[in-house]
Amino acid sequence: MPPEGRDPAYLLDMLLAARQAIAFLGTRDKAALEVDALVLSAVEHQLIVLGEAARRVSADFKERHPEVVWTRPVGMRNVLVHDYGTIEVGEVVQTVRVDLPALVQQLTLLVPREPEV
Image 1 (tube, helix red, strand yellow):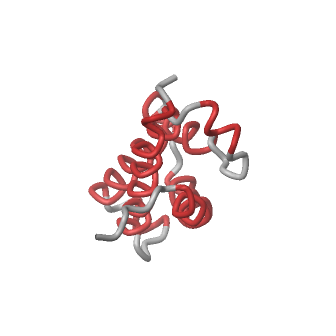
Image 2 (tube, helix red, strand yellow):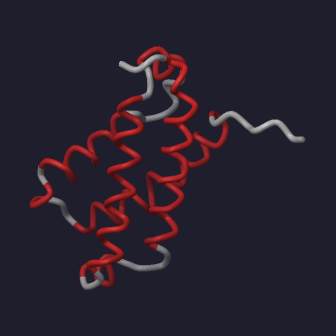
């Protein structure tokens, strides 16, 4: 595992990727996403970035923040990277619509704020 000193950067990466996935999906539903390979690819890429960053957050930080479901983003990343032929577009939409808004709220509280100058 990486040193905990990198955790703030990983949390920021997670937050930005989650926000991007939500923005890229927009109001599209499963049917729209199935015929828009460009947007589907963009959303999937953000989910991969999110999962990779979640995987790298230190075990100590994860233990201190059990309110975050750390395994779901990592699991989605693993499916997208290793079992990409089995991914269901509906599962991607469900993840972005249902899981990510709550994750964004949690991460917003955990990402360190820049001091105001």
